[in-house]
Image 1 (tube, rainbow, N blue to C red):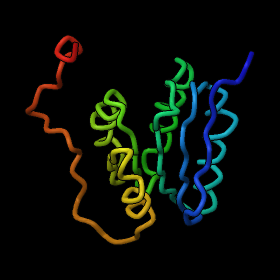
Image 2 (image 1 turned 180 degrees about the horizontal axis):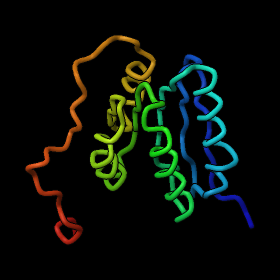
Image 3 (image 1 turned 90 degrees about the vertical axis):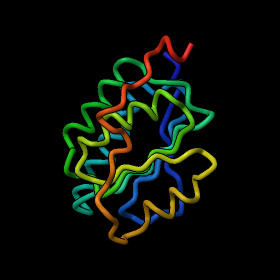
Image 4 (image 1 turned 120 degrees about the horizontal axis):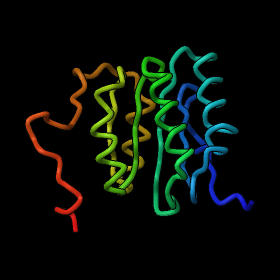
Length: 149
């Protein structure tokens, strides 16, 4: 089986920041062989980890196993992230993050791809911020898939 995707570490970030970019089609093996051990290692070393997750033009999606491992990673480490920055223009990822961000105890911010430098500055910062807003109001209906077609 040919490996079609991977996570690449983005250089130039502090040790407490795990900055990664998803490339190609991400599989369960990409999570189990790289991302889960790397998050676990950084949590053990730092106590909490700041995650910068870029899903750009080179991202081709997740396999079902990878999607499950992504959800499991988030649920198992709900209190282990200091901050999470997701950088993407992919609408279904943005909607998913808005729905699940309130579950995390850490601030979660979404950035467009053209704001990567802003995302890097925010994730590396240690400045206290006002309480995190989940970016989704419970009194608003999420658009149905049919509305997007």
